[in-house]
Length: 237
Image (cartoon, rainbow, N blue to C red; front, side):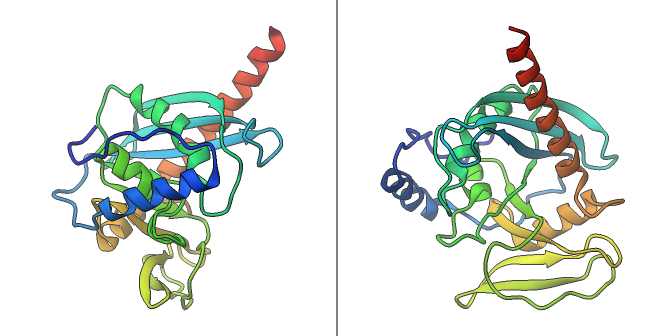
């Protein structure tokens, strides 16, 4: 999937190892304009069950690929496993990426843009989930989250498409975007191989009816179904 990708790394077991991975991969992030309008966009999300923070938590990942023009589903895939890494603020990606990568590998089509339910550059070390996934896959990737993780911003206008920049330590790290008239904005951040203007445009176009883009809505539903089905199968055994 893509040509500008980093070699896969060994998944860390400790906080120090995870921080070292982020430090090594962070310089590879590129914020660049998309070469062309996307034809296929993919939403990615995960659902958890378990101790809510344990490395043993059950995790289900989903990826849903949509036609960027019609927003009709083209393909979907899921994967189920365990988190393998405890919850530590700023290192959330290490709980989600292994199972997300397994779901992506099942696709037979190649998305032009990946939309993560999470952050990209809007991260304490400027290397959130969307950055990490983009660097590993070489596919343009952005983060779209329900709320900002950090930084300061003004409330955008109430109209659909209104935006305001999110700044942290003097840097623009994200943009809050009003996807529907009068609803709470979402937060868009660069992951890799996309700039903030293109990322904002992709998210707005994918959120034609609801606050969240259709990619997020469908991926959220699918990963919850996959987790439920996995638990039902385990109970039946």
